Structure formats: structure tokens, C-alpha cells
Length: 279
Image (cartoon, rainbow, N blue to C red; front, side):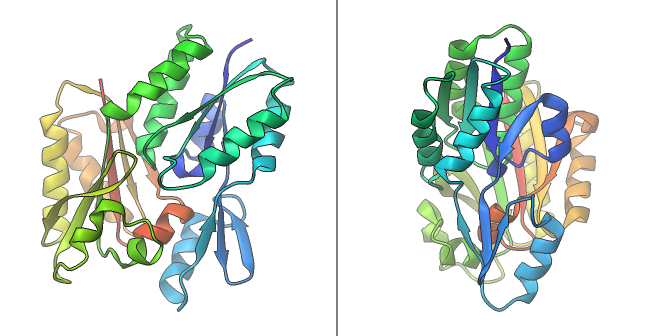
């Protein structure tokens, strides 16, 4: 039986893509006051961002419970005897710990390998897609898991932030805290380094940000296995970037997604993320 793959909603794997590739996605949780929603299940990204911008108090987030993962493992164990679980960086969320704890609950039912992707958003998502493709080509559980463990070195997430206040208030600022004192008119571009957010550069505007992101992709020309573009409240900016990138990498192969509500809690509005999976 083929290896089944499980990930979390912070991979930004859309429902359509998950169904197409046979991936099971475990949601995290976002809370507005006493209202708790499963990420991308009980609240859409569009509804979430509307509330994020209009409500005075920032939402909070929580990782899936061990039982959430165990329920998925038990269901998949009826279809396979091997499961590969690829989750968000353990430095950004407790999701890895929940997935590992759940493994103990069902270890007698099937073999489960849990791998920390050491990244987030489509940095994680493109690794998941690459693992699916490897399994389709005949890779077994051990081979696929080892590939995922090494993949973070070739997964390059570059994120444009209109503001860092959401990241700071949410406690996920990481090494990017040195950018907090920058002028309000300066926009920040961050990356993921060693599993946490880290500063990359600063730009003056979205237009300059698009120029920078385009130049980054151009620097990897002919060395790109996968490419993804995501946004929060600014799909038009994402459209512009995709059109620009078409000259470097076919836009039909660029994965598009809206940044998930849980990630959006920290990225805020008018953010954008570009991910390159290096070949």
C-alpha cells in the first residue's frame, strides 16, 4: 500500500490541491474572543482577514491536539500501514509535539514518521508536494522521510510584510526583532532561517518589494523545482508578481494560495509570500 501523507494547514495546501494529491490536512485553531474556529474549515481566509482588519483585538492561535492527529492516523491506518507526517517548524508552533504524541496513541496500528519541515506556509507546502511526487515515483517511507528532512535547505521562503506589529504581538518575531525599530514607511522582507523568522532586507513600497521578489526568483533560474506565490488581503499584488515571474518560470506551474488564517494572525494584511523549492 502506498505511503499516505499528512500535513497541517500552515503548509497552505489548499483543499483542492490536497484532494488532487491525496493529502490529509490537519487544521490548527484560531480564536476571536470566545469563538474558536478550525483554520480553513470553520472560517474562510476571506472572512478571517475581514475580521482581522476590523476587530480591535487580535485573535490568538492554537496547534492541533494530539487527538486531532490520532483521529487522522486511525482513519488512514485503515487504508495503509505507513504514514508520513510533515508539519510546520517546531520553533513556530507546538504542532510537531502534538503529532509526535499522537503517534504513540496508534503505534500498534501502522508505522508513522513525523518530520519537522523547519519552515512554514508554502515553504512547508512545496516540500509536501515534493514528497507526494517522490512517493508516486516509488519512494518508500524511509526514503521520502529522509528527503523531507533534507528539503528545508532547498526551500526558500521570502515574505513581504506591510507591518511587523502582528508578528511581534503574536510572539513569533524571532530573529526579525531587530527590524522592529525601522521607520513606519519602510516595509520588511523576512525569510525562515533555522526554523524561525529572520530579517532579510527592507524596501520602501510594495512595488519595490515586487522588484526584489522577482530578482530573487531570477537568481535561481534553471534551478527551480517548485514555485509558489501567496497573499493575505492583496490578491492583485500577487497577480502582478505571477505575471512578472512567467518570464522566468511558467505561471501555469506556480502554486497560488491565500495565506492561512493562523499565519495571517502574525503576518497581518497586505502581506505576500514567495517560496522557491530549489531543484
